[in-house]
Length: 152
Image (cartoon, rainbow, N blue to C red):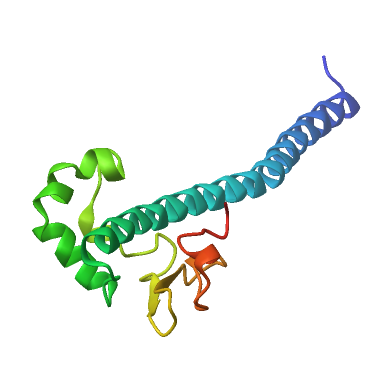
């Protein structure tokens, strides 16, 4: 038969065992949650950069055909919609599962910022993600920065 001391000791061991399991769970969460946040941020960065590269591809094609860049991203989307070659080859140009309606929107925050600078001898554009420092091109009319991405 168990005495009062033995029962107290067994209850105390059970309580301490439960406390250890709970603390181990919180330790696990404190290690994995920041890692998951970093992975989510990296996935958003990759998606944003891919979308910006798709816009760059369309801008290059537009400029080759018309010798200037479109004035807005909305006009670029309208041109892609109307251009039979771009629509027919959208999956091979932009990748499988291409969604034209989301092309000009950042996965992070709102619409991409887009400006065309045609004041110099070289027409250049500046495409920027509003939620990060990622950009393509420049506001300065510098041919070396034409189509150059900040992450490449």
